[in-house]
Length: 369
Image (cartoon, rainbow, N blue to C red; front, top):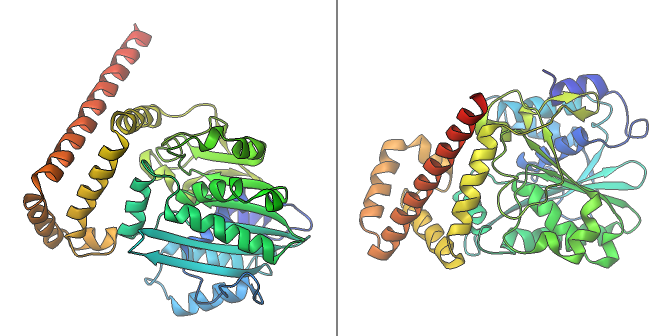
């Protein structure tokens, strides 16, 4: 099946002057903040921009094979060779990890021909800070990254007052794109032409029913794979398109697996049973817990995980035995109330999982009879 690399082969020689921005371009731009380009791109929205090809070449020079994700390296190599992407200019590359506030944030701005620009936000990275902020989104809005995204978009818009604005992101980045656009203010919101939410979660408050969101709604384009369990988290808009993927289950969240045809994705008419069941389990779990209970669960869970003395998920999994010993020791030493919160929360999640699977089995049996 075709993917974004096939798209670059087919359409990479057409400039944006000849072929306007499409959903696949937006997905590619939404991947870029995951790649650590801030060393090679100025952080100010008012600075002199650098060519995408130059920043990507510098990154590849400093990150030989094995020092960066293979798909990231492959993407940059293809962008460098593409007349469509190579001459684009980048600026305002920012990456922030704030352990005290619990914030993980990164963004990048791409200047496009025709007085356009694309603001792209990073999704969740490998850090525990990022994962903890994700869980925090289930009981708190706004979280620090959302506020930072709003501030970032406003700064970029103010620095380029004559340009039309496109905003996008993947995973949490899609949520940040929506939040920043909705809260960009009347002085900037009218310049926003489209928001691309690529499998990003919803909100824990009434954002999607607010007047500002409803004003933006027709310009928000949400894409999620058939087995998505991210975009259907929390309160989300039902106005979305279902994208086919060349993998299964939770791995469909990987943007590189999304299927492409021409200048658009290949769409499905319905989601998978896995996606629907997981949505129901998590939705019921989130709604079953009070805001304070979700906060207590998050604090207890990450108290245990942080005991592994690793800053990243890969650090924990890469030192499994040592990490497990420290995690178990931390769990045993938890305050009894915190341990009780963890035990009851996981028991609730397991009960809901069994209930939903039982209902699915009964439904399937009824259909086959």
